[in-house]
Image 1 (cartoon, rainbow, N blue to C red):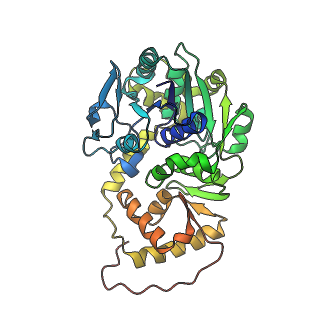
Image 2: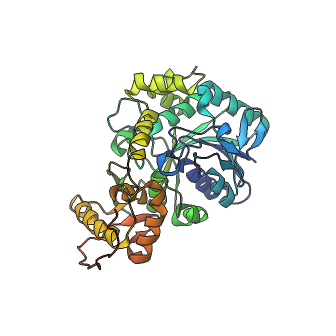
Length: 378
């Protein structure tokens, strides 16, 4: 294992890390990708990130670092995409444990570096919210990135900060990021996407999905998340830039505030103070709300009719694409129904599937749906 990549926010950052490593180095070696098990409520109904105690079958790499092999399993009711990533990608996925604060992650990094003696260490963030101050009105999920940034800047080793797909996470506008981006490091191509194309068919990450789509040439405006944030898909979407690590730390107020934290509770308290909220509080509130919502039946005729209405409204907003996560929420379906929805839409309207996004047709298509004799569901 010659190289170590820290997936700054977990989730899709880990998938992007695998794509970048293969694009740069081919199959000559595999990376160790250090990442969170934090898949949000779409995959994991339990708010917040998972730690080693939430899994069975982990393998100990160092005293503080555990890897997630393909046969590891999250302990119910928790969920995680990491075991499946380990099964489908050649890399080693090591688990970031944020429950001991920035000091705990720093310790994990130091142990990994001592154990691996890697040729390179990269901190990779898709979208660029790792460069946030903390008070931006569009910022939604600063905690994970701030934690990894705080830990990386305290390690006595050269770490390169890379931002892929600037603006694609919908957190900071691209225009706000331009002045902070350093030299162009790489531009993803459709060929670069191929090694992770199978993963993109099921992985819920929106930012990495859009990163891959722009690498394949998709352009337009994509709506994401439960709120339907519009994200521009431009020629800058598939780019990767080097960013000065010290400048990022000096800008990121939350990262500076949590340097000496030893628990996740401390990190949350600082986030509420610096940013005005903790995103885990948001997850707690949303999880409690979801518990009270009756599951909707996924009746094809009903869903397709609702989709027509959604697409008409999206078209009027100038939207050209959306993610399956956003569609699931917009059609008021449960997160566990996301894959069933995806299969239904691809099988019935494959011409709109701009992998891994869903294309909004430019013109109205008049369709008729037979009336279901069963319950209307959704």
